[in-house]
Image (cartoon, rainbow, N blue to C red; front, side, top):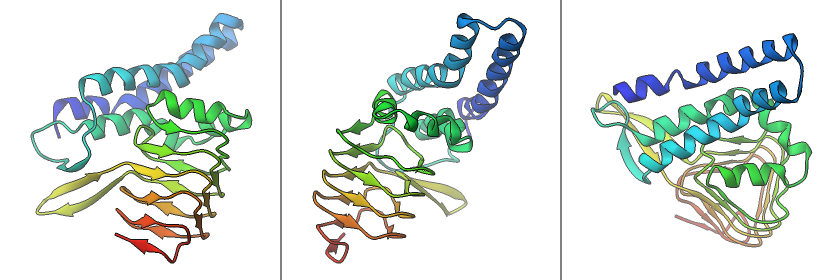
Amino acid sequence: MTLRSTILSFFPSAVMVLGFICFLWICYSPGIFSVATFLFCLYGFPLLIHKIHNHFYPIQEGISYLQGKEYSPWWGSHQIQSIYITFDFLEAALRLIPGTFSLWLRLWGAKVGKNVYWTPKLEIADRSLIEIGDNVVFGQSCGILSHAIKPKKQDLMLYVKKVKIGSNVFIGAGSYLAPGVIVQDETFVCADSRLYPNIVIENELQKTRE
């Protein structure tokens, strides 16, 4: 792991410390400015750092390795987002206001269409690596994972590829979409489906091809 990777691994802790300091500030001196600073620490600061990071170190789709001498842009991006994976209530609050969560994902670089319904306990591992069309419904406890990691020859092989979901799609509760999955328009994905990397789903779940 490179020095840059090690430094970014402490980013979630830094956000928590800043958030705690801002919370104490609110308790000591409540006001609009202290509350706004607290919200910026939780939402604005990670987003800003991610945009800067992605500008200099854009994520490349394909196969790479995590334990070599080269820096992995995916690793840095994932560490910046990990606070929302660990504390999912931060993003769950955004889903209470229609359209807010979709806008939030667009700010991270995702492509999200209109009328997308996000149900509770949704897990998104890579916010900038998803494309979603219009009129899409996610069932409860779904997961979109645009990366996969497995051991290989004393190293960790990383595979990264966007997950693409068309328009007028229903993703059943408990379903997980792996990297490279494409769900085409007018498709119903059954509950608890496990869509493996690079599968293309056409119309019904029975019609699949790699």
